[in-house]
Picture 1 (cartoon, helix red, strand yellow):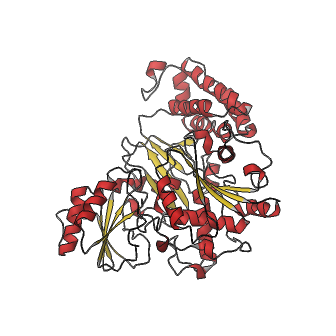
Picture 2 (cartoon, helix red, strand yellow):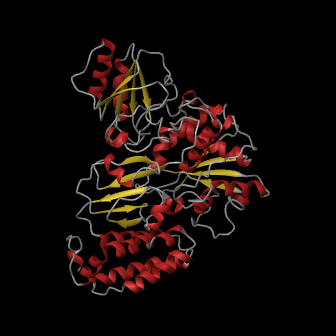
Picture 3 (cartoon, one colour):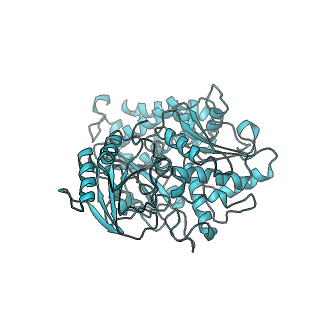
Length: 522
């Protein structure tokens, strides 16, 4: 495992030490181990703690030095700086290098947020304890699953989130009701299998709130009467050891013992029903025909809830609000437990940026706020919203809601890819369709043949033939008839690029690429 070593035996975040220094980083950060080891080696009276990522990778490894309700924040520290921070804290002195922020705060168990900068972007609720609490220590988290029963009902209308969710953008309670009414032993699958680097939200939550993720999965299991709860990762996921450590730590506490499973590192395996094929050990990974839905006929024919990490955590956070006796004000989702607040959306910001970031936005924010969390390296020429098969657009001035993004023709998986001014929309659309042609399972005609035909139509543009009407009609047929997500969503980069950058398609047919990207092919 790269990144921080085992964190289970570290002191909890409620340590009584006068000064506590947290080092925050993801499990894929190779230099984090050296930083933590250097700090621990010289620590005597000062407590040193490893925590998970905050979602802002530009800060990692992030040092948080807390004393008497004040936290000093130091970004991208190395082993030498970590040593200096500990020694300075031991001596009651300051260091030669300055923190980027100093925050006074109450000790409510959540990450203190500066007034400005990437950490100040949005409304950190699911991310509230990421980077602050020990992600694998049960003592640092409220266990909701211990306090709910099969009779508990979720009143907040939580929608499924992300590509890995079988009920994406529809109320999870509808699937849960179906599961309760269907014969058989229910099972919950948290589908965390995602090989697309554009999607970092679930990965951040898995690494920064590991106990909460497992507790949320088991909570969903209790609510639907499940006998099994599974968390599916791709085999190369660096967070796997952390999940296994947290599961061991929770073995005596959770009413259902969650199991960690892995699948091959293939994009197609992240489809909700393809994930079931992976879990059943089938050689061919392909999405299942629906109906029936997994809720009525899922894993080995059992009624199955297939959700993303974000979905089960949103449901858990809603239960904390609905059942305020579960935790005091300032619960694990970072908000008071009294009062109603609409669920947030997490966005993974990648592309032509110095460092990717995960940002959590409420309905009152603008999607354009994500730019404040990253530094574009080549200006902003266009943005792809919704992962590899998201929509291409020339603006981020949208409400971060399902309604607004759907109306704009953009994707809802939570990926925001900022692309520089040198990027060509024709080339971008073509590369994404080509990926779909290579990665689809081949089971349905729109996925197998449609992606190939769409790829050829785009290639024809470079030869001087541009048939916008034919492209648009093929895209419509694929979108409405495909059985798989790849076939249904692959046309979206093309249709949105045509809508917003249509004149550049004509220019390519006439032998010109204004960006110079495609000149050798024209």
